[in-house]
Image 1 (cartoon, rainbow over the protein chains, first blue to last red):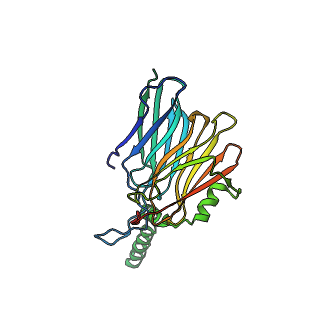
Image 2: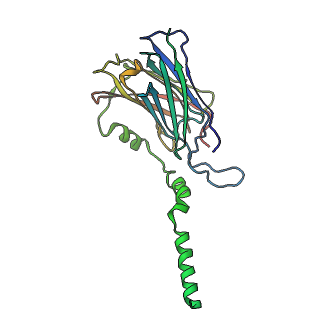
Image 3: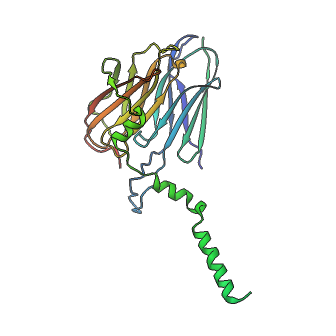
Amino acid sequence: MAKRRAAVKIIDKNYSIGDVVKVQVIIIHPMETGFAKDKHSGKTKPRFYLKEIEVLYNDKPVTWFELDVSASQNPKIKFAMKITEAGLLKVRFINSEGEITEKSVKVLPK
Amino acid sequence: MQRRNFIKGSLLLAAAGLFNPELYHHRLFAFEEAIEMSYAEAEKEFTQGTKSLDGSKLITLDIPKRPGSAATVPVEIHVDSPMQKDDYIRSIAILTTKNKVNKAVIAEFTPANGMAYLYANIKLGQKQDVVVFAKTDKGVIYKTSQKVYVALSGCD
């Protein structure tokens, strides 16, 4: 499989320990419902979608998301997180075929 | 080996090959999974039969009433909660009411989140209510909804 493009970003710029920041997560991924037909071949496109997003902050699970086909394609999700220490924020995307994409961002409080 | 036996054997082998589940695994799954999910089913899956309370004061929704495109409708949710160890929002669910599959996003939170906030993009097939559930750590479920008007279907 081709490598999937994904990104993790802490939206707030100047944050310190104890602050609550917003984090944005985005992945370029189709969301095939399984009902749609291909325009050229007329065949039903098989169901293929992003199933799960896991967020780990210094290897501790913070939050996770369960998506279904009613989410838009190239899903974009924002959530809040409390900064407790410097470290690594790791996000794991799992799709309906079990393919895993990982992205991480450094947490550097001032 | 007799010719008859050979033909029998090869036929059997061919049949076994055809019904090999591994060969069909990928495609069968793809077609089997395309099952419609009604709103009642989606609601039951999240609430597990618990009655929900009115959460229109607790939950703040920010959804455009007439979004430009039905394929990406931004849904912004803010739930009023201290997010402490013994009082926090455990999960938030975004459900639709008239799509073919009415489950969009279910988010699970921990006190490490610090704020019960969620932004997600969903798609809508027609004008309908978007329903948002919020479940606390004690199992109390709050519900609120908003009608969203779309001109064209976002599902193809």
